[in-house]
Amino acid sequence: MNPRLRLGLPVALVLLVADQVTKWWILEIVRLPEVGRIVITPNFNLTMVWNRGVTFGLLAGTAWWHPYVLAGIALAVAVALAVWMTRAENRLVAVALGLVLGGAVGNVIDRVRFGAVVDFVDLHAFGWHWYVFNVADSAIVIGVGLLLADALLRPRSEGNETR
Picture 1 (cartoon, rainbow, N blue to C red):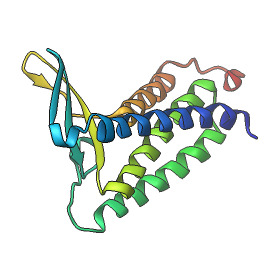
Picture 2: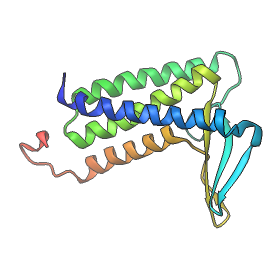
Picture 3: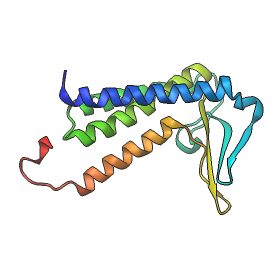
């Protein structure tokens, strides 16, 4: 197996399991859809949101086919990420792609199972609320941040591709 896949795929799998376990816990143990909101700290709530769109609720729709179209697009992106992972320039890129891949697949599972993504982490401070998100969303943001950092900060010299 490709060495970058050997690194990135386990990251994706661990992230996918963590995402699905936290969503199961929120739905089945905490039963957040029934409760609605639980205040954890002055700046952190568990708040139930069914995200029927993509990032920040964009492209939300209620037609029966809508979640399947979004899931199909996300699966195509996941395949592209896996192909990119086989060609990753370094270990950091492989890990970053694993985070994005695991998060994307976690949200695809939600779309197919529920018709929407389970979001529940609600952070806020000084009257400002971030969008409610989940473990998969966090991993996607961290993965994209690592990809950007690598693209912007990696020295460009001959022989650096095997780092």
